[in-house]
Amino acid sequence: MNITSSPQTTDRTIRNRRTSSLLAGLFGAALFLSACGGDPAPIAAAAAPDTPAATDAPVVDAPAAAGPVAVTAGESPLGDILIGANGLTVYGFTNDNNATSACYGTCADAWPPVIVGEDWTVAPGLDSGIFNAVARDDGQLQLVAGKWPLYYFAGDTVSTDINGQGSGDVWFVVGTDGALITDGAAVEGESTNDGAEASADPAIVAVGQTSIGDALIDDAGLTLYGFLDDTNGIPTCDGACADAWPPVLLDSAELPAGLDANIFSVSERSDGSFQLNAGVWPLYRFAGDGAPGDVNGQGSGDVWFVATPDGGLIRDGGDEAAAAPASDDSESDDY
Image (tube, rainbow, N blue to C red; front, side, top):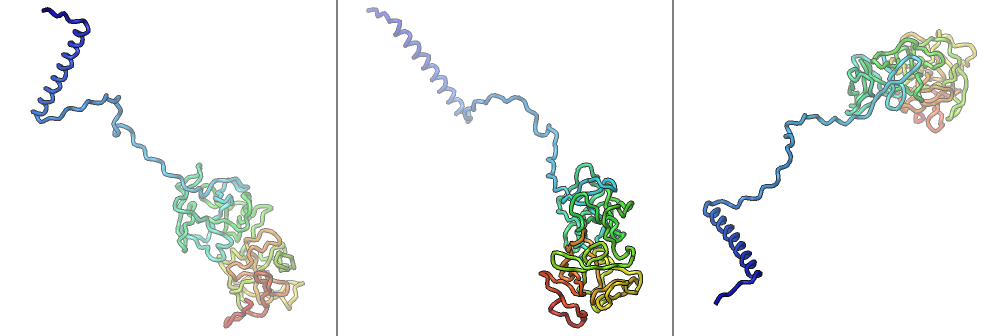
């Protein structure tokens, strides 16, 4: 009996045969790989576009982070000069040798060194090759330009000030080339606060008012001070100390007319010059005072104090130190 297949049965039979053939082929391939000791090969991913190897690219070191700018250039009546990070003029000290600072103690109070960290830098436009930093006695790093350790001046308060220029004929502003600018040292209209080597015109003293009481002032209105390390009326502030604390000098050992001999006297300094005393205290100005009434030196180092009209000293808080002679053997509690 002939059985005629329907079209649906024929299609199903063809599909079943194809499936069986495919399975048989995959089974055979697996047996072959197993017999050869191989694993089925993974399907390869699509190849990425060609890229240069890491070694083909140029190697560029990452730039180091820039440190704080220690100095920049500024304009002044003396030309282009160096300006510190605080915006104030910087100076060099001719008593410094071999890029080594000689300014410590009271000198550094009036002329604070320009201190930098290890990552300091200079402003664009300056020749970084002329700058260096040297260690001070306390281990801090002081910036050097050329051969000059750099300092600020306590008498400068704004960026245009150059009040320290020519002070004591040893302090000068620094040019952008690292050289001291000594021309025009006495700038017209600026206080130079000269030191011990200044002109010894007769000093006329008067009484002036300050924020801590009446005080002795010089003929320019600047406050006068006494130094506790001076004993028996003998001045001991010389050299760098006298740059920071210029003594009140006289032409001779003769007391200027008009001064009360019961209060004032004259002492001879180690260099043969003469200094005015009030009570037992040789008198000094402070290089950090720039205007009448300033008492920026008061209490400096706990040894510098404002001089009173009666020859005593004003301690912090307005208490007066006794005007009696200081002794080498003992020191009064008032001092």
